[in-house]
Image 1: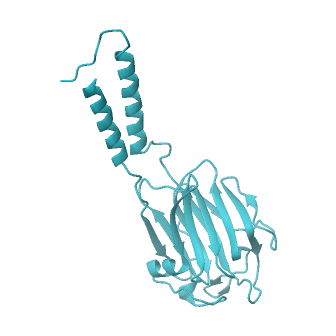
Image 2: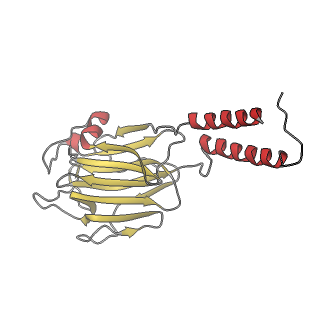
Image 3: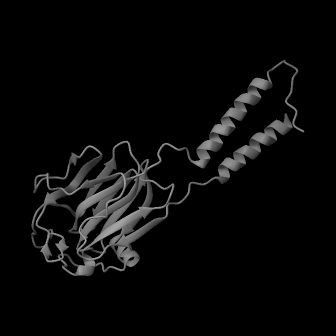
Length: 240
């Protein structure tokens, strides 16, 4: 019996030692003038052009659901409130997503997991933020300052910048085995303006993590021990 308990304790210790792997995210800023991401496998895109300008950004495109907390679809610019992302040759003339100061936009993947997120950021500001979640748990969060430092861009402290190094397509690439199912865009003050979102779906899904496998093994072992060592049977499992 003691050896059986020792085996269970050892298995439990192994489970406790298996920690969730911290996600490693690589950021990359594409060349100025590149307004959309490269074509990747299993990608989902949203350019907001089929949405109504001036309305809250609450909609679904089938694969992604967008939930607004005072973030809107916009076209054009209003001084002090929002400015169209600046492309090579001029301002974006199509619809885009605007996240006001104190507002958020939540993007959820429908029954999928993501490994890639790309978006065109207009006038990257220090107070902008992009956060990734899985099962409602925060994986990684990046401020505008962090995005700038990791991509070589410049994050301003003022709105409406048309500098090329503050208006770029930025990619977030998760390492193998790291996934997200929700993205939250935010801004401390006016505003975060983005366009041409792309989400890359995980090719392999539904594979249990190491800790899940260990829990399954422990469960099977426990059931086996209980069934083998029945009360009054006089039979004991011997470990040699």
